[in-house]
Length: 277
Ligand code: C2E
Ligand code: MG
Ligand code: MG
Ligand code: MG
Image (cartoon, rainbow, N blue to C red; front, side, top):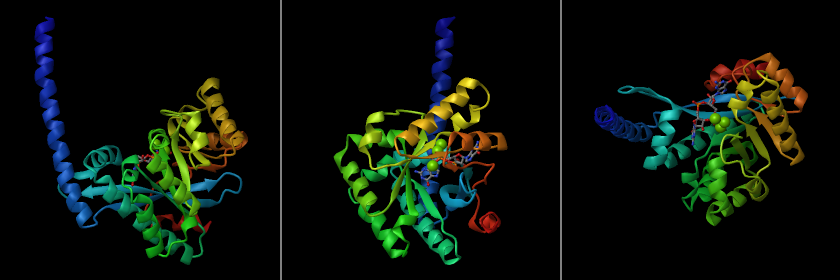
């Protein structure tokens, strides 16, 4: 009966909730330790200029393997870090590593920008912009090599929070590039695209994945590229996995390509072969 089914649901739900809470607190505890010991890894995924086929940038992506709880993926890690506030520590760690790596690539003769993903919670810290600029200065990284990827959710909240807006403007004036990540997935608002100091957008990988499967899904991508270009944006496609997608995106006039077909996220030493071609 309904009542019995309902009863079962309540029991299993609370068991599941209990398990989830337990997992969360274990992850949080281990993450604190990992941050303390600087025991996270930074992988880099290449971005290719679609016009010249050259690798022009790398996106820094957090990787975490804990000896007790194993590998924790970003999809699990980031939401927990955002809820607990540990995202601020992760962001600082990632930025410093990325700056040092950008300097190293430059010393090796490569001209590569480096992108770091930022959560809106990090920008609730009034000293975020200052702290970013300090890290860049301390690592002697040229500021124009640093790009910050923000999501549509971030952009939506930033639009209504004056302190986030002013911090973004300050960073942009100092030479940092903002990229609107996962474009098309959420709260796409044409208004914030006008207001925020941004001129790069990255079409979400779900659109690239469904591209070429139907006329409609192909034309959505075309439309997004044309929209971005008409706004004067540089347009990136993420999640590019095959040559057909590359050809179509080039035909649409997409500027930059990223995805497993170009290169998977990897450690810097594993990426040198890509850079030497
Ligand atoms: P994102 O910034 O949109 O990054 C793209 C994700 O897609 C990455 O997953 C990447 O490994 C994956 N990917 C790249 N190319 C392909 C492809 O061709 N096919 C498929 N199927 N997947 C591809 P990852 O590293 O697991 O990160 C997931 C999300 O977690 C990121 O999405 C980003 O939002 C967040 N994230 C990762 N590192 C950080 C970080 O250091 N700070 C913050 N705040 N968020 C992070
Ligand atoms: Mg990203
Ligand atoms: Mg993305
Ligand atoms: Mg994504």
